[in-house]
Length: 629
Ligand SMILES: Nc1ncnc2c1ncn2[C@@H]1O[C@H](COP(=O)(O)OP(=O)(O)OP(=O)(O)O)[C@@H](O)[C@H]1O
Image (cartoon, rainbow, N blue to C red; front, side, top):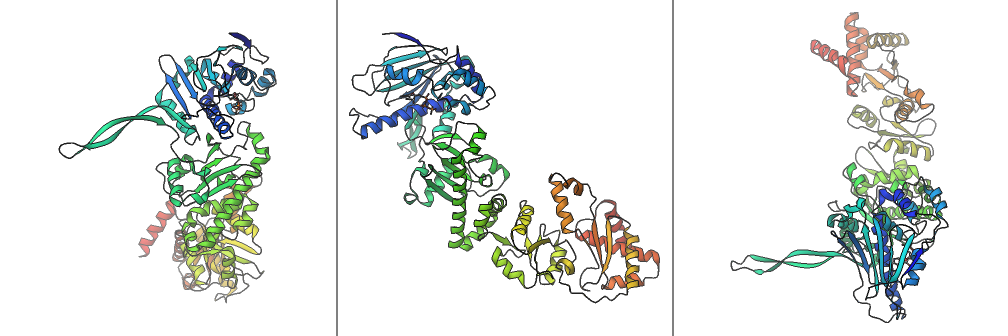
């Protein structure tokens, strides 16, 4: 009996609205329809295992096919099927209270995901690409009659007897004009690969032809023949569904290369597996990252019951772990709602915390088990760890035991070990331990050497994140302050209240100061004469630690009062080593011009050693040097 009816929503024509909103993301229709087919297949399997279905299961597979001439795409399954009554119930009654609310709520929606799941519109996403949709279905129930449903995208539908002779469902999409791009082998293959590589139900997309070896010819050369077989989409083994005890190292590496072909082997990985209070499985990899490109290319992929959803996992994965690779699968993440909802979702927060905890545990384990190996990997993982410590208090608490500080001799220390190492020699008169660091060992070499002469240790803080990391640990560690090695002359880097004897009288000092002020003749350079080790350089140019950090923050866009520092000129301190032979010589030079030239030369050498001497000053220095020789 042929029957006509109206889909129960209160608007004339919902589909143009759906289409309009969802257009940008319209490949989702395939994700929704193939997922439905796979669900129906899983259901019949379950019924059989429960003894509620006794028919032949047969080859349980989902087929996607297309017909370029007829302009159709068909999704077929051998699942539980639907009777006409069920079609009416499941397909016709769209699960939302009213189209008015729908339109109101989502007139600004940009993402199809926001709408589809929320309103149980999975099936209706078909109308994003089809002008007409037909269902042919035969239910698994005994004595069921095949049913056919057809709808042209208006709220009118037709339902009546169908033609399916085997259990299961065909969804036939009559592709609309704007969506003809989907009627392509390449396009469909690409979409199916993206979403269904790990689908638990076999998914077949037509046939493929392979060339296989077939004996040898009369000259003994191998012969080949073409063999046709099903083009199966989901060949790969989704290892995150297995238990870690069933897997070996190779399995994890193979899986990684399946996810990200042509990538270098990962450093290590974490197998995630929880089922309470939320359900989540997955494998996260720590990549070996060579370039920034790698970060952008290989992202964590989010799955829901083995169907790919997105690689935009922001909010689900803690920000500092966004650089990891791998897969997360959770049916408990509300995939289909807006971002702001996601951030407020308590499951998402728990998942976030869980992942952070797991990562910390893994790192702690690696550190404990094989420190040498861990140290080798530190240059790669240090970035994650430091970023994590800065951005997440809880992570800091865990990571402080396995964070390493590396010094200029490339030796590694934990925070605790380092404190012990330098405590004796690097504590200032107020009882603060001063950690010295360099962010550019080449440029700051002269300072590093002077510090080392005093028996000080210098840390290497030369990655982009280290500037923040320095402030972070300084803030967290008690009675510890960090100073860049060029923040002052070696004798004053750590103020121990030890005064060196001055060879110059007060009057002589004043004179030296005047000579240098005149020679330098730049207000941004503040000259002082110090009693220093005679072995140290005659002139040292430094920028105060506090001032430099403020300027760095201003340069990075720190708001508010930071602009104040950003606008200040670069101010430097020029320390003249009053105990140096050269300084005495300058003082004793009777010829005023020669005296100024010598002072200039000594000052320029200081600038030169720090790469601060450029342009016309550099040219003048070179000319002066030539004439002095
Ligand atoms: N291929 C199919 N075989 C059997 N039943 C199906 C098939 N496709 C859809 N259905 C039935 O129609 C219902 C509605 O499908 P629809 O995709 O609109 O929503 P859903 O799958 O329940 O939810 P969502 O897509 O939001 O996850 C399904 O729950 C299922 O009962």
